[in-house]
Structure formats: structure tokens, C-alpha cells
Length: 150
Figure (cartoon, rainbow, N blue to C red):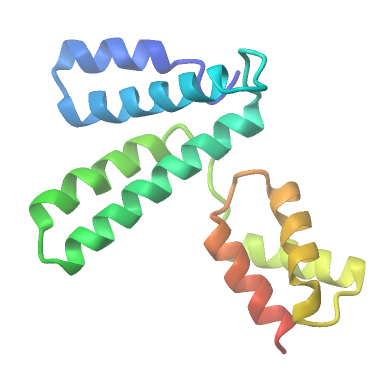
């Protein structure tokens, strides 16, 4: 069962409940998925990994917008963005804790014998591939940078 399998059902439920924030979030997901399916080179299908990347991008956009609005003292605009980020996040696989991600990072660094910041890209790529959307890239980058700068 894919992360987007129940999207249509959720859309219907949000319409019936007249939940405008959830409806807007779900429509954003549907729109991004349709854009990915119809983009040049796409085969009118997207796999699980691409779906997760789309969802992560949407969550990041909402969180970035919310933080900008908060900096400008516009909590009235930030709150709906944060709510949308939470709704979209609910479609993502369960996120790993920082400790779990740290263990994966440590294992990969020792496995490939990374020796400093010059290996950061290699480690980041391998960690991202192994974790597969179960952690934010920002967290992975922070942990890798901390480990490699020691």
C-alpha cells in the first residue's frame, strides 16, 4: 500500500467535513502528484520513492513559509501553513528519531571509512538512500556534518 493510496478517500472526507485546511493540503498533494505524472519523461506513473520526495518537498515548503511568516509577526498566516505541513506529513512514513538516524550515519561512516568533510556527499547519499524518506535531509546533514568534523 503506497503513501498516496487513500488520497482520494481523504479528499472526499475533507469535502464532506468542510475542513478547508485539510482540503487545501490534500489538493496541493494531488496537484503535485499530477504535475509529476505529466512532466516530460514521466511514464504517467510515480513510484513510492518519488511520492515520498514530493510529500517531503511540500512539507518543507509549508514549514519554510510558516517560519517566514512567524519572523514577520504574522501568526495568522503561519498557523494554516503549519497545519498543512502536519496534514501532509501524515502521509509520510513514520519518521525515525534523531538517535536512530545517528546510528545509521555512524554505521555508514564506519562502513565506508569516511575521513572528513570531503566525504560528506558520499555519506549523505548513502544515508538518504538507506533511510528512504524516514528523516528530513536537514537532520541527516546536521548529523553527518557533526560526525565528519570531529
